Amino acid sequence: MIPEQRIHDLNEAGLADHEFRLRYLTDLLSRRTLDVQGVIQQLVDFQVAIPSWALGTGGTRFGRYPLGGEPRCLEEKIEDVGLLNQLNGSSNSISLHIPWDIPRDIPALQQLLQEQKLVIDSVNSNTFQDQKDQHYSYKFGSLSHTDQAVRQQAIEHNLECIRHGEALGAKTLTVWLADGSNFPGQQHLRRAYLRTADSLASIYEGMPSDWTMLIEYKPYEPHFYSMVIPDWGTSYSLCQQLGKQAQVLVDLGHHLPNTNIEQIVGRLLQFGRLGGFHFNGSMYGDDDLTTGSIKPYQLFLIFNELVDGARDQAVTNAAVAYMIDASHNTKDPLEDLLQSIQNILTSYAKALLVDREALQEAQENNDVVRAEELLRDAFQTDVRPLVAEAYRHSGGVLDPIAAYRAEGIREKLIQQRGKLSLSTGL
Ligand code: AFD
Ligand code: MN
Ligand code: MN
Image (cartoon, rainbow, N blue to C red; front, side, top):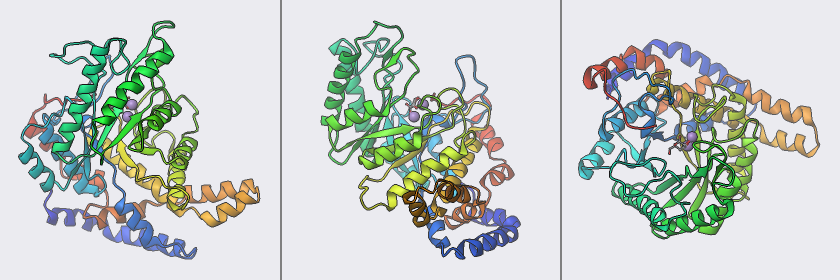
């Protein structure tokens, strides 16, 4: 943890400039009778979870170039997230992935979480790999497998994830099902779906009544001909059958090129089934890049739907769980996560600036140009002073990446954990 006095000193240097820019923006926005303090408060309240598997250097099947100082155990992963949260006050929870993060000393972990001011977000199951001591293989599927015994093993793993989560106060199970097929004919498409629905129902039955099951979809990878849960429609239909505690999870990297993700978000909100969000950026594949680095306008349009839905009394969707799910192959993972949070809050802030009454009027009058300009006006506003102010309000620093570098955090982590320390994860 960085001492509070040091946080204060780090902020001193840039404070005069920051206040100047904030005052200018506040004056400008207030002319539109926008509640700037309210916007800052909403940014302060916004929290995005960090997955335990994104704290080490990612890679491809060709190679990995770790930069050292990676967290070696769950405790160190918690410390890394605590540090990010100290810098920006926007990531107060961590998602666990079992079996990588099986909690051992529960009281000690609870104490550490408390010290670091963190909670556990979701617990993620893993039936996409075979573990050393596992009886049956998932090579041909897990929850959708043709063999009941394999399905049962996968069901039990998910139930075990819930038990680990309960011990640490989590209330969400996220299921990303990697099942699918690589060649036409390999898998009976309808039967694979039915078997999956059946397995999920067994997990759902074993879930405490205050838990939520998030069902993630993905159109390709690891299978390249068919995935059992390839799209939001399939996730949605499974949730409908399971019950109220099942919700769809939208991962930005899990769409085919040019998919209108904001429309999916709008639909799911309308149906009250948007449960979770995984942020990342995607150029070709899955969760390759920093969220907002490729399509910032799309990220803004997604937040525009979320903000619009939150203000609509007809929308009764429960709170959405936000998480970053990106692989950090080239950058320092902690810097990449700080950038991601910055991009997320920036998009959110811009969406909060949209003049919704004027937009509705333009839409009702079919004034295409006016409607689009209202969105573009918000998108083109430089909201960085609002985001920096939100960080400061939460006890963080105005410029988290600059502070991370000034503190020499990576160097310190390498000293403590070694150049060769490797984190578990994807
Ligand atoms: C993979 C999947 C998916 C999931 C994550 C953790 O593509 O995004 O959330 O693993 O299971 O990245
Ligand atoms: Mn994901
Ligand atoms: Mn993914």
